[in-house]
Length: 191
Image (cartoon, rainbow, N blue to C red):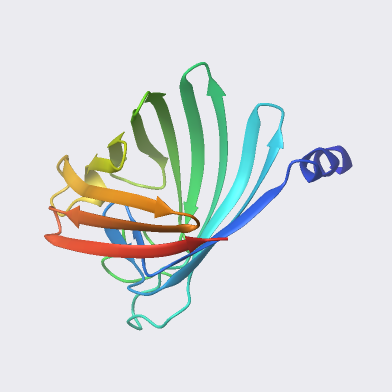
């Protein structure tokens, strides 16, 4: 344990975003502003980290956007691999993407080809639907498609169509979710 802690201490990075609301893959979590801290360490070719999102303004009483995730990622050639443990510690609303106090394990793979990036992921544990998500990004434009828990009917369809931009430490995204017939304008700052 001492050797792992020592190896990580040389490569630890921390950061945080403050966002006007937490929108992930076309779905709003918490209906409130949030702080999203992160910590990451490197052990050889593997990155290990934790990411969270915690509501900082009150949303509806039956909705909480709190989340605490662990992940491990690595690259082989042009491919990036990530294993994520999603955990929503206090969300128990009946419309929750996943059940409260339950971990959902997702495996994802991505690649970049110039201005185009591709990402595909599937839940491999903790989600009876084994929901899948695919995202294509071209410069500032993105489209995400999902099935299972990501959609109202469970069928594969667009769930996130967006445009994003950054300036200094500020960022903004306009996101449309055709499946939910809604849209979001999110603003944030990175520390």
